[in-house]
Length: 292
Image (cartoon, rainbow, N blue to C red):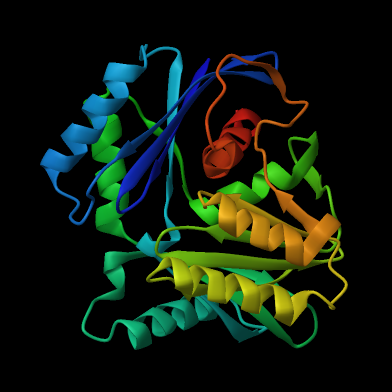
């Protein structure tokens, strides 16, 4: 089976291809290409499908495709929720949350998910909402390739899978029990905090320049360096100067994620530059591998 994952961003797409052999992966190809994705038109979907088909030999019978979306394309927020809400009440609460942020739009324009965490009478919930037009856009790309979409994920949470050591298809653990996962991008920095293997918090910074990125990276480190985290794990595409800055501040608490450093890979047939930018692609492939 051939797995293709496509990460969609405003200004670039990232494509990775692997072959599955007995629940292991052989990395066959990676590709990064500039792209202006300001509208989700049929013509743009055809263009992206053409990029994919020109670089990968696709067999309808043996090829699966999945997409991960840049967090910029999603609404993400952490809110408190009553632990005793019924499923119907919870769905109403999620719809109300989206309506408050987008008061002029119908909530039916969004695909909405909620992920509860924490304990006690008041839980926290990560709300994730994506416009249905973006989901339809991804499906149009797949249709032009005569493929069906297996998974659509958000890139930051797909990258999280690269930190897991798979025990079985239904259970996994993280390499570290207390860590911060940081995605460095051109327009934002995404941050997830984990304590005792459990997700505790998500937030992001909007980035407008290299100086913004440096400022927020320094702030993030200074705000959390004494909080007992084992590792600050970074992924994304960033200059050597920023990497040196982070390394100097964090020492052995710093890790720049290599998504291909995994026992699940039998072979790496390519040597991609800036491997860390493909962390969302490979994290998504791990989901494809175990979801059957």
